[in-house]
Image (cartoon, rainbow, N blue to C red; front, top):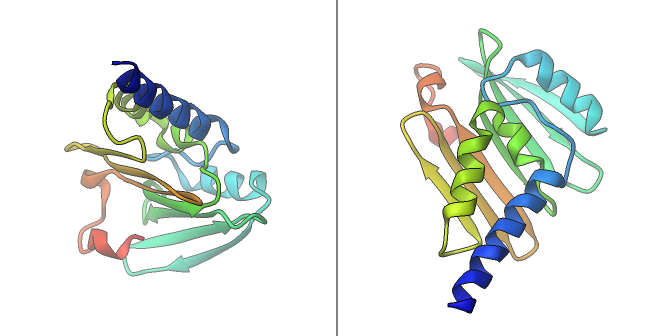
Length: 153
């Protein structure tokens, strides 16, 4: 029983560390203006790569964290991916979906290295790697027509 509680505590601690580890990011479902503010607050190098149905805003911090924000033609963030030695502020990345993430992190009892949510309105995966973090979050209904989720990495 104490080992089970230890794992749950470790998962909750990891989720809270992820929430508090880096400055706020553009919220999933937010607008392109928030992406531009984040690029400045992260003090990261950044680039914009246009695709047929969206623009990819990519920021890379001095310590190597890579944040990719996918913005549709109307200026809405429909997907976010990240990887690096530290995690961005996942709750801030998720905006209005943060409560769902924190609820799942608190409720999950098994593997404290992987957290996934696969709902109709939110697809999320956060992975704690041996030397860092990797994650992705998408709003399935907001992915532009003609965009394959596999190209969003």
